[in-house]
Image (cartoon, helix red, strand yellow):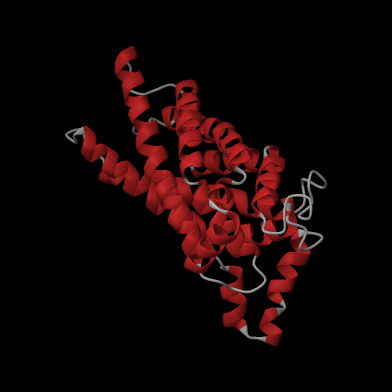
Length: 266
């Protein structure tokens, strides 16, 4: 299961990477054109490649393991939804151990703060010489809190919706589980909805990771609202929704196919 998740995650992250770059540049405080515009849309892809497989594997191992442990045939719909929300949320927290450092490095390269992800990463590592290991680690994990705050609501919206649609399809078709294709369609729909609703948190995460100095989420929230208005919190929503919608189809369709092949829980 972890292997399927890792392959799916890497495939999604690399093939749809230009959309992620455009989203980051639209959300950048320096402006879309100053952050690179349509040029070099694969900037920072090295970081995404390195972090994608282990991040996806960590998520699926945690999610599937917890879902298997906590699920019961006697659960009501509400209880099942709670299990899925809990498993998915903890899966995202686990994945953030890898996702946050790679996001910090990737986004700084995407926004043209550095020529490549390698140079962005090196600049953070160099902090251990001038300011110590603690500062280096904090910089590498800058935005951890807001990333978790983005991922947990995202999964709380997406996964119960996805699992609920799968149960509906399986019951309608008289099957034990949904098919991989059905899972892909439902993953796309639920992912698109969750992506749109959590875009404001994604904007905050991007601004925090790209800021020259470490700032709090509350400070950024007020600053963006005062200087740019409410519309700024939905910058990049179009590429974000498109990317996650397609990615959700590949990611969750692959997961369901592997789960069905291995006789996993619904």
